[in-house]
Amino acid sequence: MGNPRPRPDRLGEKLRQIRERLDLSQSQMLARLGLEHDMKAARISQYENNEREPSLKTLLAYAHAAAIHLEDIVNDDWDIPEKLPGKIRYRGLPHKL
Image (cartoon, rainbow, N blue to C red; front, side, top):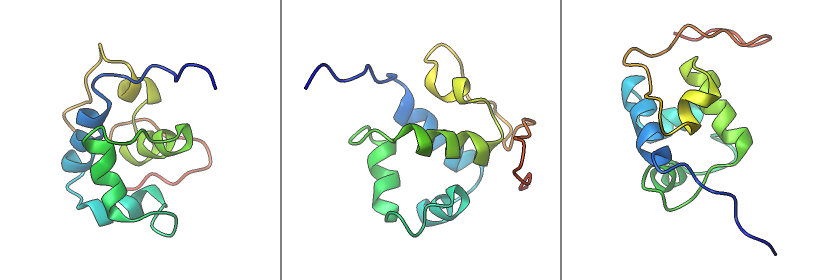
């Protein structure tokens, strides 16, 4: 089966920061990610507590929702911007405030 890919040490912490800085509940975060029909709010808690690792598609949804670069989320040496949403505008997606 091979070795699992390395997980960023600060991933759960950063996902929680994104949700809190956007001032969203776990259920609201699911809706912001566009995943409310795919999973329950408890999954957000599992991500934030490092009990489960989100898929790359889910991490990209977090980056889009927060209007930040995906590298901001996965690079342990970088911090999440204090003010969210950020200034990154993804092509084809409306910028939600």
